[in-house]
Image: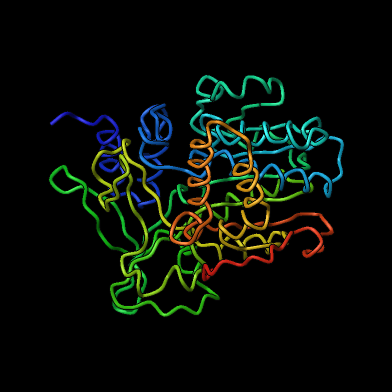
Length: 385
């Protein structure tokens, strides 16, 4: 069997410390410089990768967000509008947003600066050539620390970021909560259960009024709240738009999910084996949106909307895009038909439309919800939880 260098590095760390929390293990597996899943430079998205994201399905996703950004810019009302995207990767979403702004909202495009935060440091060398036309509007940074505190008037956007932030795993047994740790047995990874590494794990569930069953497991993402705190520090005025798969706490921690929600992804196949193919597979868990909402409110953020991705896209005009495509006098109508089929996957129940949720939070804006947020009369039955 070929030696996995990242696995050996993690094993060496365990030998020094005795054990790692699952969060510590996940941090190394995903973000170790040069060897981690997100830092190795390998293709992760699309047919040749491990999974599809909404921007990789169709440019309509970025076009809808461009409409949202344009309306937000009018409300923010500053001479420079900054859009910050976390984990922009190859720049697909950035290109779709900027292309649409240039085409349909030229005034907003003229004042927009687009920053991509890429923790893996891939930067412009890996970016889609479609970004070239936008030149100086694009800037790559490796972390929020490169942006002045309170210096952003604009929109901070993340799509499938929070689910990949390292999380702790806990198990409820004997009426108490224990934590899952990673250690070694005869040179191989093994999980053990012990007292929590931090009191924050127990405090996390305060106020949820959830009764966990004997043997039930769950993920606790302490990094999600920390991330939101860092984000709101740089945001002087504007919106935080978080898109990811997940639930509110009561549904997320339901007894139906006795083993939690964590999973590993490789070549479009799902497993629950985090200790194989280390650095070559994604590790993720559903987002607790209740945590992001309460963390935001404690930081002074106002919750504008929590809904499904499908309803958000409908509210902000995705059906208009489909109508336009259908009406185009295009000899390549098969291509347009194919696009509309792809777009449906973005918003219909049973696909990305129901599994992905959208959380919109505001800072230092006098937002009257019904005036800013365009509630479509079309309501799909998603059962938002």
